[in-house]
Image (cartoon, rainbow, N blue to C red; front, side, top):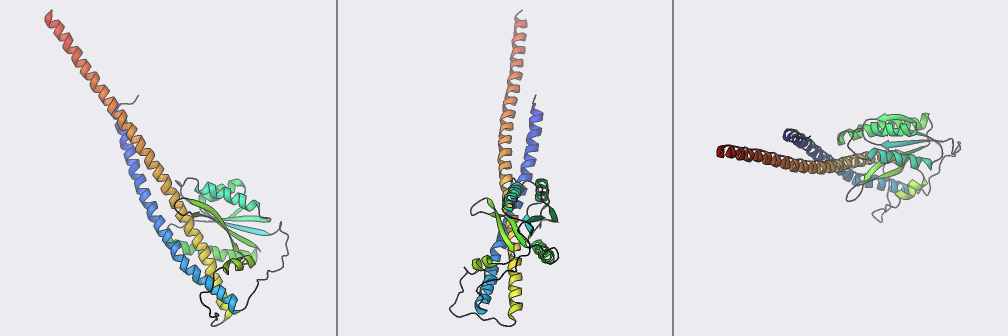
Length: 298
């Protein structure tokens, strides 16, 4: 049975927990701002790189990208999925939704699959499903640590393509929605094929003057493609981190509301119990007074 002291103790504990939740809310909000700012800053950089590649196509009069003849059957080709998850909890269905999305998406692709995962929790979920997780990376804790992670993945992907003959790479990550929430998205990362070229050429050249390439054309294209691959991975990582913190902020807001409701219930219960205690004391006083009064009359 609850007592005034036990209710008071529960209220103090709830208030302490509410302070922690408020601090985590503030931290998540701050993180969302920095990651969204990073994504926004990439837009101009991506546009410049894309225009450079489009300019190269125009200057070199490239009409199509020829793919190397495939030596392996579809069921024997190697596919790598680069999945961005989280290392920390309190993110709701962030990792579970991503694991389900990866599982459903890879079923439609023929070939042998291996998974590279950014985040321990997503790694555990994908391993439990039965995927072959061959690489694990820690989740960056701020914007400045995204670049080293991206460079590691780029080096590893180039090495794996040459030595392990991985033919296709796909990126899976959570992407913030306009307004609120996030969604799971899949992007083909490598190889850069005819579809990639067609999608890229939807970006129109900004002037009527034909573009020209200064210097070595091949070296220029390699630098532009490296920039494109870098910004694709950086953007995916930053959007995943923004989504993670948005999910954590949503979880903290629900927790804050639940704690507020709990405090209201505890306060109401405390006041009812205190009033009941006061009523009992008054009843005892009145009963004692009536008893003394009866004795005095005798």
